[in-house]
Image (cartoon, rainbow, N blue to C red; front, side, top):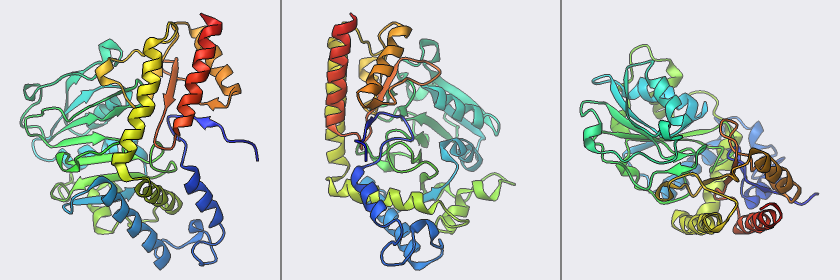
Length: 361
């Protein structure tokens, strides 16, 4: 078997090697069942145990209060863009969005199909290079909720705290930062996240929602898009993505064994600080995001030359450092250093960056 590369992909992203080895060992015979998890009935006792354990461990990891549902669904954060207004834009029919990148804008555009969606603040004119500083007065106080995108995967920015919305219910897309740090779930009405960045394989979406917000969906909502459908059925209204839930559950166990989110946050801070410190001291590379808003998960940087950026990506691949190209919409480079990226991978990247700089400046 060839040596594994350091995979800096923004998603689908690297998974813990320990988890994949365990999954491989049980691929044909999980827990003495004589079959793979992928072959099990989702109504069977063994799979129900997998699902239950995954929820318990996620609740433990994140400190999710008892008055919140944890839902395992499909469709990615993209489907959640529509599920959110269909379920929550049910009072005044208004919702306020802060636009910090393409995914935040897509969430807003989806909400605008179902009600009075309003842009409370945006950094689009400045190429999403910072998180807008907002006050309660920027939000309509009769809005049903305020929506933010916690971490901007494409442009590399992140909230450092929950903005003052004047008491509005806060909904957040946390796809690319969930499980990377300790957060106070009780401060949010709803958190949703695609799994393929920091949880597990693509195809699973996790929704953490205050129970009081469930059961008030718009009339004629498609059954699958109603949060209540999944809450009432224990996330098994239809066949769930069984393998994805199994792998995600193993990731939850792995993170608990590593010391939980407090430990992961410290490791992630170290990884990001080393890389940003090198970039800031470099004569070749620049990080185009405001220092106070930089993401520790998705580290975006450029050389200032499109030709040189492409050369960097090609040569890095030859060193076993892959998926470093920036999003197709902006180019440059992006190193996604999620939980599964070891500190050694960041050190190897910095070592290559130093050599590349010496040869190209």
